[in-house]
Image (cartoon, rainbow, N blue to C red):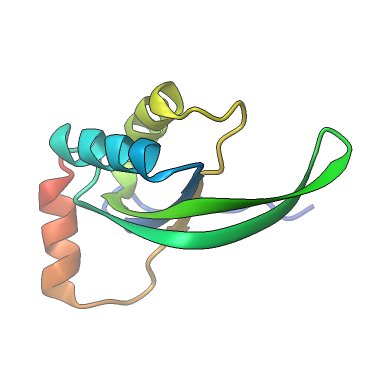
Length: 114
């Protein structure tokens, strides 16, 4: 079994989260940025998700949030997102950013500092 190594505390994460509608996506985005749990949240409308839930294959139209945050803030961001999200089991996946514009990555760290 392969175990993922957690990113360093100064890493930047790109996190994915799907939402059922524009209102919940916007509320989550505003809260995360306002509370400095994320530097920026982009919302992509018009995403179609197909998944298995409670034994049935389901397809839903959703809004995808792209959350940019410091790895050190992930747990706090996750706790807040789960409290706000309307789904019973929200999608939340954090991917370490391997490369990027250094000045932008520094800005993400600064804006999401606790």
